[in-house]
Length: 565
Image (cartoon, rainbow, N blue to C red; front, top):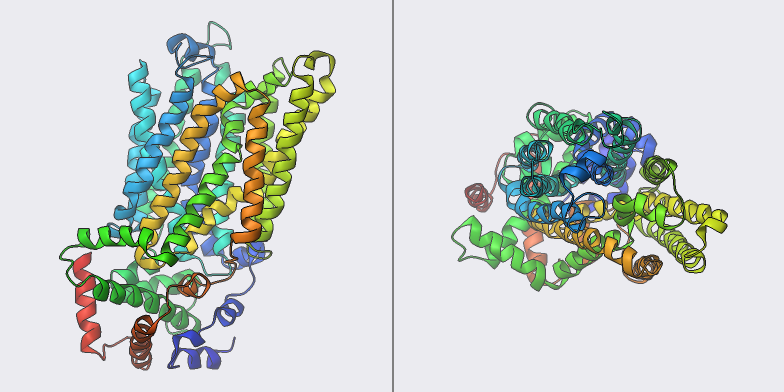
């Protein structure tokens, strides 16, 4: 897009003329090429995704620690086949459910990046308690507090990444979160468990307690790195800065993110889009809730609208249902209980841990890499449908083999290996599809005014679903055995049908234009409201880059928005 055309867009009387197609062509390619070209976005997204690494690392560590000899001796009700094993896995998800919910007001009040810093502190406290645990209570409290931090991180990191990335890279950048989760799982499997700490003092009765305490303690390294980076490396989200009326800072940050000068037409066009969306939300709040006397009352009304406003309720259902289905594909059942699953299909010996954890970890990472390049090229729907159909096929074949050879695995080792191969095939198809896109979707479909609240609810659904899966999987494996895989087969088929018939495509749609896809800007009142904002921005754009105010109404709105924060 030429500078003259972009400049004409800025000075236009209609913000709608800043079309996503024009901006997409200005930003450049998507996928790998786009990330390489926008190296700063790649760096920031990777650094922030240390939060995802913490999540993945915890998943991998707990699955290995539970079967360590010294851990089983010290915590007999938790390790091995203890009656509290499901709870020690699930209590972290319960804490994460709480963390995802409480991070919404923190992300709005403190900023996206400082809410991540608070999450790192909670995670560090949980890590210390787990590494130093001397009884079940201390272990469970540490898991719960650490889970609060993970829940905050899982909500805050994709929210922040989604808000700093341009539309052509938003999906790829947020996908790095899943890449980091997969990397954390793999590293915990290989460097800590399969070829690392489990051998400290041996693997039998003489095993040192460091074998399981050290993996818990090592989580502090990436957590401290991310904590420091929140203050010295990660910039504020420009959309959050506009929301709290720090527009000059927003322009400066956006300029650095796009590697263009502040007065560049493309930067000006994007800041106009962000301002239009933020002012529309602020004006909507002012006109809808004229009697609200505090930010708490406004927040309550915004939460309420997520359930009562048709277009917002529809978005919230889609975001939450996608999170639910991500967990009920059964992926974390495999991550948490892979060794037990592999033993149940007839594989035994020292290779079980390597096959069930190490190989799963590698496949998870490898399969996430192509997702970085395809979600912004082929779109969310196509990738989800391909992943769902192959995950369904995997579960069906595993369940059928299990049903046929349940009592004769020893005589049919090839069937056991075939089942193992389809477990790996399932992990591969999960990683590039719903594993990534479930994190992308909630970050992009909500208006700025309720984005943090909606993200908190959606991610909390992910964690409560994760909690349920962690709790019921060992029970299902013990009682319904192969039926466990038929259970997950049913949900992967639901995912395929739901995406095919009901899920809209969001590829390349700017966040500020999602109303065109979901509704929410219909009617004379909203049209008049947007017209006022467009006229105001038209006047301001003639004084760029200083944005001097031309409207007393705008000044009044600025003051009210600042008071909210």
